[in-house]
View 1 (cartoon, rainbow, N blue to C red):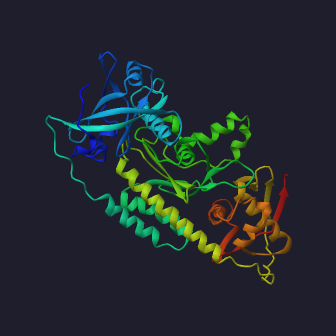
View 2 (view 1 turned 120 degrees about the vertical axis):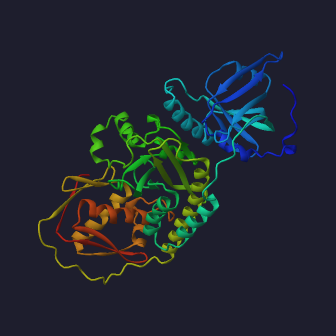
Length: 459
């Protein structure tokens, strides 16, 4: 293969070629053996890594694979699907990754491509081959002018970031973030999930806000590593899929995990995730604070290829802003931690038929009148409130109490404690309007019951 001019001398930046890496038009990869025998094949994915590197999907041990391991030079032809313009990239093979963020991101996208092309049982990613781009060469030929863009992503990001920064309350921050995606970006279906890393169970994500669905799905859960949402959190990388794939269907993830464990009877205590029955496009972006994943921002569409790399970049930046706002609101809540007031007024005796709460200590799940409500740390919090209310007619509580209570198994001060209170405050009206959690100030809230409480601890 002929030598190409050095990358630094080429005027075309790799970043400008990102539309070519969407998988709309297959790319041609050329390699050669040590004796100079050429080989040309199609590749399923050319994945943009950064301004100097791309990754190609390693699916089969074929002639291309044999060539690059012995002679680490190749050339790939990519096409802009919007204009038909073509470029040739001179590549040097560096390494193969078979796990981690890059691998998982490519594996998810390949699953969508495979499902879309009827090759779901054939396309299986064995590794992500990382190449350094040594040079970029424009291939002469006819092309169309690029399409006009309606609005700059930076302009949209500015409007979204301004809305996020304006909130001083976590509940309204979560809701308005999703409302902004709908109004500013036209994303009609979205969810926000936060990480539950405490309690007696393995870490998982729990739903705190959703937009565009018939049911809210509040309290529904996704294990880390399961479905597109769980993989994004576990690998701390955005996952974007342009075509439907059952392999990354988040709605099946929790049920499959439970069935695999031989505990199918627990399915009755799972809250179904809302969502499209067969989303054609999915985008899951981790929310990271001080190098720790605290949640996932997820969006979906019934249209193929609805989310572009620009959507991905914008939501990654937005999630960083969202994570910073969550952290600041958490610090503000901690700085205003109230001390419990021993002289808090007692509630008036409740009347009417009792509300029966049943608690299972194994996972802190709570049933109200035989109907499942919540589990995990949120369930432990509700059980604490209900016990103290029923025993002492106490109604006033503080965030500080929850943080210092060892029975709740909160891991540390940075845990999403307020998010669990928000979840409870929203979940109770859906299942039992006679019980309420009402915020009475920063770091303070009231537990209200319009009926006597009948508590059963199932141990």
